[in-house]
Image: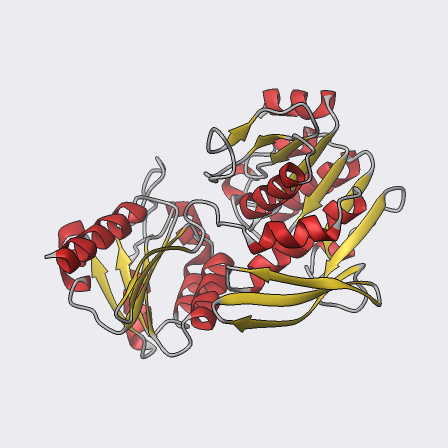
Length: 362
């Protein structure tokens, strides 16, 4: 992170951060600037097929980087332009378990931005910040925002919405990803791109052809009313938005969410939040926790999620075996199997999809 900070400080740069959506927003901005002939250098926290090296691209133009907020180095990051998507309590183990310290780090990042800060005006924390000496623009659904999204809906497998600058209609966007959270990412990307002089026609065409980042609503299998989706969502808010997006995309299907908790600390702080959002699924299968090198915490047990969901009339089952969960899911029909988590749950989604395709051939 220190090396990235040096690169961003020495070049004209864009920094994109927030609890959720920073990887997707960075990929979107990068693709827009690339299509506009800006030849950007890109640092991405995920894998995207538009980048020659997956998560990196070297160019001779502006530097565009996803900026990680998890460890506190962000407060020393300086860029010319910045986007902050949202702010929620996460990674608090690196902030002495104090949300205020996390917020302070992102606030310093915004203060260090040299030219333009773009904030989510609908975020209850970000819209209270006072950055009087900075040029700040807001995006969101509120009429108070500078860039506004309206009339969002699904049409023939695409998400369609209108973008306004204040009261002026700019145009409509067609995106092959469902869910309000992706619309927000696209809106933030559009706002920054327009402010930096990129034509809306380039932005619109980019989104029409945009492919998602790896593990962001990746449909691995879709045949005979059975779909398998792999998604990186691992915080309560991300999971809720992903379940809602899945319901938008498959409005008549049963949604079975296969959830793998990521980190003991996150489950410790947010177990009740996870239970609340997982109830939006029809069924929930919980796979063994992915520790991410953390030591177990006494009393933190993913089986408690299963017990709570069953007690609240949402069918749930715990799995410790990869083979067992694949065997059971191979029997499912007329459903969407939504895999969520930042751990090795993705391997199960891929193996299940491969097994289904092999069965289709045989």
